[in-house]
Image (cartoon, helix red, strand yellow):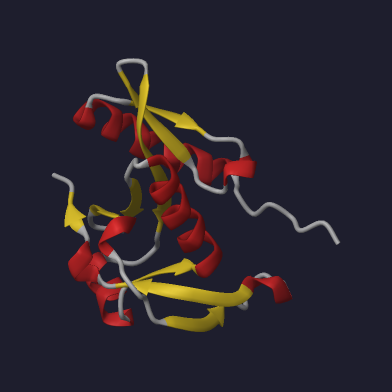
Length: 144
């Protein structure tokens, strides 16, 4: 069974708004990675790759996400981020656009995470349930 891609044109437009803003703020270019890399972007500056990034857009405020226990990320995505950071020596940033704030963290700040099981039920896709890691809110920094 080939799994559908759930990324919509609205998702891509939201990514572009965020990456345009961060490109200017951080003085780097966000380059969209092919799907085989399992992360969203590589950040480039001066002709060199300087970081990788996974970008999440949420329909909750930062406080609501904190009340849930933190930012949920799939265990597969977490492992890819950790492995990429370890194998390249470059940071992997988890960037989250909440309804009220843009926040980020480095995956290197997470050691021995608790692993849970959950998923979404709104798409009638049994593969939407999987192991995940909860990234605590205190690991995230706000982007002005």
